[in-house]
Image (spheres, rainbow, N blue to C red):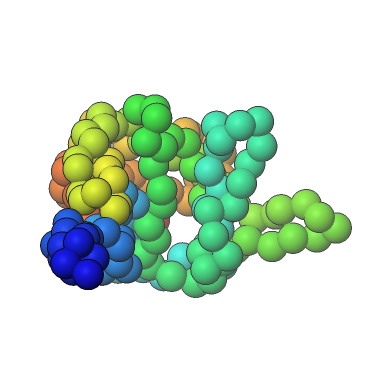
Amino acid sequence: MKQFIYLFLIVIFSCEKDDICSDTKQTTPRIVLEFYNNESPEDTLDVPELLAVGLDRGNTEIPITNELIMTRSIIALPLKTNDTQATFILFENYGVEEGVVSGNRDTITITYQTNNVYVSRACGYKTNFTIETVSITEDSDQWIRDSDILITEITNENEIHVKILH
């Protein structure tokens, strides 16, 4: 019986409170973009029917999340943890007709460095990012005019990292 009590105490005291990765633990943050009016750069701007599609994720275009298909002024996009560049197509006035995505599309490319940070035994590692550049591919119907990196270190999603002028 004594051995059972000792074994029980060893098991109880060897567990750490971080053996379960809770929803409140920080995971790999996404880059947060906020849209502003190009003619009045202090004013935020809602982009109508916004859709973000990540490229270079295999050979297909994958929608980031259905919650991005709406009018909004802020979006959060996931960066690749195993690369130093991510490219996204942002659609304004997004729609689908006969399985084809339509709307005004602009392409942005984000280059960055990665830094793996240990969170806990249960959660493992998260990746933080350091933004180097945000570039916009020019086209004849461009709705994204410019960008400005506000915060280079991406360690959480509680702040705006990049200002996008529309």
